[in-house]
Length: 488
Ligand code: GLY
Ligand code: MN
Ligand code: MN
Image (tube, rainbow, N blue to C red):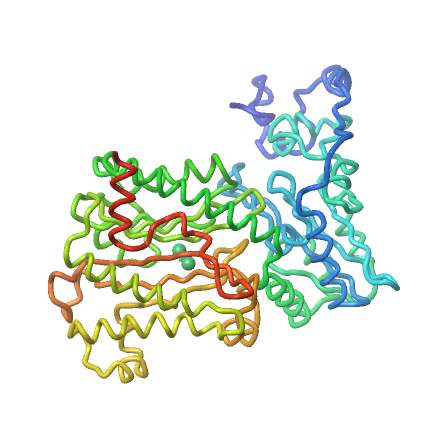
């Protein structure tokens, strides 16, 4: 469909595109411009309820305020990113902004949260692009106008939704440029805002802000746990969808698997939380196989690593390795069961008060034991673990924190995360795997090209853990029975 760039007359066709794009389209007569300003019903939403997590976002802002008293804190959502020419990538707000505001994907582009220091703490304001103005033609002439991309909330509506004073973001850079006093900004999202602050901030102090916001997200509040459960529940349905179409997928490719899961993610959630890994046959040995352009063949395994992301950006991260035709072969089952046993040991080590590293160590020990038992590496097991020799086939860490980012809390300090202690409310994956590359001459031929990972999402509770993804079977015989039941 043409937009305001499409010339209506031969003279306009002669004008450079950029000239036509800037400002009011010259082909608009004064009469039409005037006409478009009026005749519209009052559609202001006066009965808006606050977003479901308004109380939680307020508590999160209070914790941030307490950590940085007397300092102005600037948390941008980020800007639209050009995909090509005048098309953009789907917008996703920064996790820091989304965590502190609950800002919605459809109206957060260019948004900024600012905490202004006061004697009592901070006053927070959400800066947004408001609903399109009817006066200047933006609502029907701009590519980001209401009649092109949909309605944003008015500032009055946004105040009700987010429980925060709302202001027009278009004046913010100027305000920040003139502001005095200590300030920190979360970097990497909004070059315009950063440019306005460039002589007032330091990388080191800004990193402390990012680190705090990463560590604050290590322990999830009840709202976040509920969202993660929703993400996982949708993901379970997405895996069921895939099993139901496996016969059709055999006629096409891994893309059919990817597309099937994506349909569930878009219908029930905001998106997928990361690129779906639909890896059949030896592609399962490529850890982040997202090309997904290979065949799906009976007799092979399909490693599906996929997660639905909710509208609030919380994502699941689940892997199942499934026999395409519903039954594991003997060698597939042998390898699968070893990974299952490693995962069982890992899950058992997810305990409040335990070391974060414990689940990784427990799972790696089981895998090392099997590799020695199978004669693939020379024991004893202690030697293998000490030298890390099992890693030729285990390749990756056994898990990570999960939340709004699939690899969540990445800016946390080592002592708070990988060298830290598990606490109730933390959510992490446990995902051991074994990968025998197709060209690995150190293993018997029957192993080659087999890759297995099993990944679940665990909530640390007061007395142990809860497997959020236990809606999907894990044990090999249960996987077979589940697949048979879905195909029946
Ligand atoms: N899906 C990426 C991972 O499991 O970490
Ligand atoms: Mn993972
Ligand atoms: Mn995964």
